[in-house]
Length: 362
Picture 1 (tube, one colour):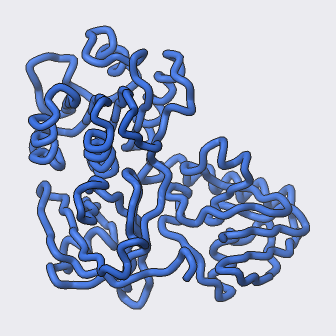
Picture 2: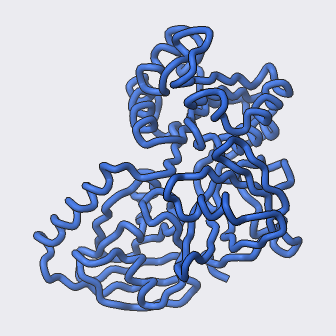
C-alpha cells in the first residue's frame, strides 16, 4: 500500500456545530485502526466524485487522541464544491473515501512535560486546535494551555459546548479568551480581530504571558497568522516554537503564481527537464517544461497515483523529497525551514529548472 491509498469509511454521526459548520464522525474497522491512528493536529483528506470530476479536500481532525473516535469538522463555504456537497448530501450511514491522517501541526507530548502552550485561532481554525487542546490536557497533566479564539460573534463559535466542558474539567490548567469582531463584550480589549496589536494589548493587560509560553500554535486566515507570528518573533520568541496551519491561500498568492510563471517563461524559455517520480517503490519518467504544469499535475496526467489534496501549497499532502536537480516553487505555506533544508518540496507548486529532476514520495 502507498501513502495515496483511500479507504471507505462509514459516517456514524453528523452534528451541527453552528449554522454553517458540521462535525462528521467515522467508524474505523478494526483492520484499519493502525492506519487511522492519528497525532493531535493532523488532518484527513476526503474524496468524492461530483459531475464526473474527482474532488479532494483536507479537513482537520477535531477529536483528541484519547477520545476513541475519529471526527472532522466541515464549514460551509459559498461556492465550495465539497463543503456544499457535504452539507447538502451526506447523511449518517453513508460511506466516503478517506485517506489516512497526515500533517505536522504538533509537537511530541510526554506525561512528564511541564509546559505552557498558547493556541491562537479564528473561526474554523479551531478544528485542529481542539484536537491539540484535548490531547495536551489529557496527556500532559502538568501542562497548561491558553486558547485565544477569534470569531464574529458568540453564535459563530464552533465547539462552544466542548470548550466549556474542557474549561470546567481543567479549570486550573485551561484558560479561554474570546475575541469577537461584531459583538461587544465586557471590555473593549476583547472586541475586534486577533492581530499583532491585539496580542500586545492582551500582553500589556496581563491576560496572556508570551514570555512564559513554551509553544505557540496558530491556525486561521493568512493575514492573522502572518501578523501574529511576526509579533511573536519581534517579542523574542524563537521561530521553532511557532507552529502554524493555514487553511486557504490568499488572493495575493494568485498574483505570486502569475509572476513566478512569467519569470520562468523568461528565464527558462524552451527548457525541457527529464523528471523521475518514485512512489510505492515504482518510478516513472516524463519530460516537463519549466514554464509548463507543476510536477504533481504532470505526473498525475502521466498515470501516476500520487497523494494530493488542496493543490494550493497549504496542506503538504503532496510533499516529496527532491533527490536530484532543482525546482522552483510557486508557493509554500506548509513546509518548515528545516523540511526545506532536508530537501522536501511541495510537488503541486514545483516546476523543474534543471536538466534532470528526481523526486521521491516514499
